Length: 259
Ligand code: PYL
Image (cartoon, rainbow, N blue to C red; front, top):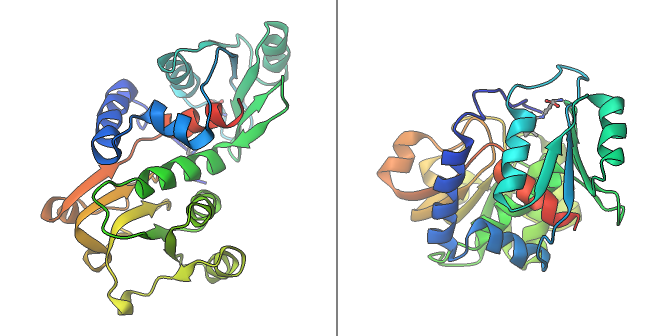
C-alpha cells in the first residue's frame, strides 16, 4: 500500500473545503449528508482517541494531527494520546475514548469500544468514493467504471453492485479481476469495446490510469488514489469533475461506519 507523506496532508482544510463543494455540486449532497445517506445514521457524540503508531516506517508527520482536524471538522471531541503504541492505547481507553483510530503501515482502523464495530480505511474509503461516483446527477446511465480491484477498489465495486449499478471493472492483476467477476458478477472492462462512462471510481496507486476512450464528454471521476489517475490534459479537454483528497472522506466514512 502506498504510504501517505506529510506533503500529501498539507493544506488539508483547503482540500476538504474544495472537495466538499465539488461533492455537493455533482451529487446534490455534501460529505456529511453522503455519509448519513450511506450509513443511515448521524454521528452522535462519541469521544475519539487517536493513537500514534511507531511500527514499520513509523510515525508520519501530520497524520495524527490531520485525523484530529477531521474529527473536529465533523463536530466530535477527539484527542491524540501523549504516548504511541500500547502505552497510547492504554491512555486512550483510560481517558474514555469511545472510538480508537490508529494505523500501522498495513491497516488503518476505527474500532468502537462500545459496540465492538471495527472497520479498515480500505473498505470505508472504497465505499464512500464509489458511492460518490454513483451519485453523479448528470450521469446518463447506471453504467459505472471501476479501475483497480485491490482492497479499496473491490470494496467500492461490491458496494456499487449492491446498489444495483452495472459495474464494469479492470485491473492488471488477472486474479483480482477474476475474483471480482466470480464473486461480484462485475463485467470485465475491455478498451476494445470502446464503451464510455460518465461515472468513474479509480482506486489504484498509479498515475494516468484513465484514458480518453474510457470517459464521456461530461464525467465525474472519484478517486482516493495517490497519484491521481486522471491525466491533467484529459481533465481539461473534457468537462470532468474530480473528487480527490488524501484522507478526509475515508476517515469520515470510517467514523460513520462504526457508530
Ligand atoms: C491511511 C493512509 C491512506 C493511504 N495510505 C495509508 C497510509 O499511509 N498508511 C500508513 C499510516 C501510518 C501512520 C503512522 C502514524 O503516524 O501513526 N503509523
